[in-house]
Length: 469
Image (cartoon, rainbow, N blue to C red; front, side, top):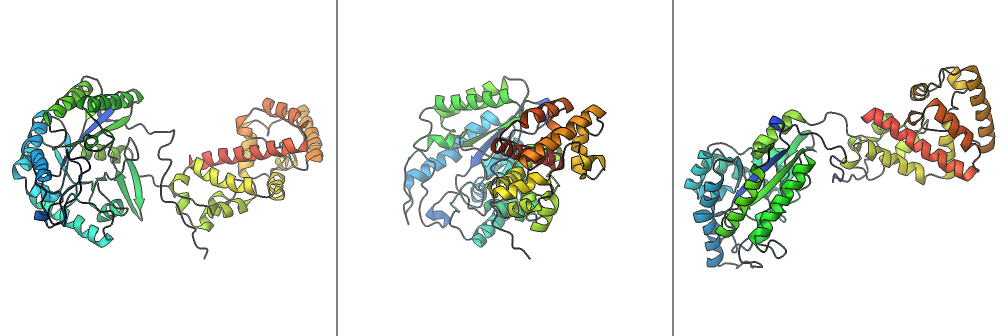
């Protein structure tokens, strides 16, 4: 059995130029999704059994952890988020759909805040067991923490979380959340303006991407927002751009201890008022967005080329370059991945092999193509794809004088160049094909060889468009 070559797991294409219409409820032009991160009481702290104090996302920019010690200033900054910032945001947003990213241990230490979240009808998703870094965590330790986070969240909130966001995640996080099997969406990605599906084994997991740019965390990093009006302007500009494009989702990330401060909170309110003043704005929880997307855009069923074994790949694509399955055989050995699972990706892989082949091999591909309106067509011995292509331009129904000209041109062309005249018939009419035939027969061989090769690639692209849609 041929061993599958290494595959590149990242999808660098996404929706590409063909962004799907989300069909937001009520014909909305944009979905606005507000996240309130509730982390206070779940941060690094020796009181929580951690080795050191917290150092991330506070007013103390550039803070360092204090091993074995409590950091009183850091603790009080986090306490502000729970004691004052949360309630300021709750008063502002209690009538707005909001998703809470709740750290399970923080929620357990916040009974009044949890009651207020539930009273407002906010979705409470999981933000992990503790607000800690997982980049170096062993996989089994992270899996165990995820399970405990779900258990504790369910105990505190009264229902298990249907959304997951670790934030300070590892390369395993999204896969582990998918394998857990109970999440309607995972948010540990910043890769798109719309939800999308990822596949892990036989599991399709919906991803509802989050944001680090339209996020008040940038008040707490060196290259971030220096003043509230910068945050306000950035939120408005983000909204205006996505609203103009239409069919997008704007995620906004908030933290009680950051935007919950008075001066920043007022800037947030002005930005949200700006958005609410527009028609066709759907303020929604992430759970609502996930449910809508799963209904309107369920995971696609077709086989994925990057996951095919070699035999299946060659069976599926070996005919795309006329009678030249060796191109598909070699293409399968390239570094394929999710970005190659569409027309452009497969075509790129096949074309790379064709372009890097020897001149003799490429000549063989050219010679494998049939004459246009030639003897094979007359005898009905073309492949099904060639028959359909030639018929699309009416080459199967020529007048006698047209057939005579095609025959004469075929003979002159083949004798001069050593391969048949090749053109992407579906791009042309009978008249434009004849005009190109008359012009190209005057070319020198090098020019015509390159032109014919380009047309072979175009024919392959058109065939893939028909095959993969």
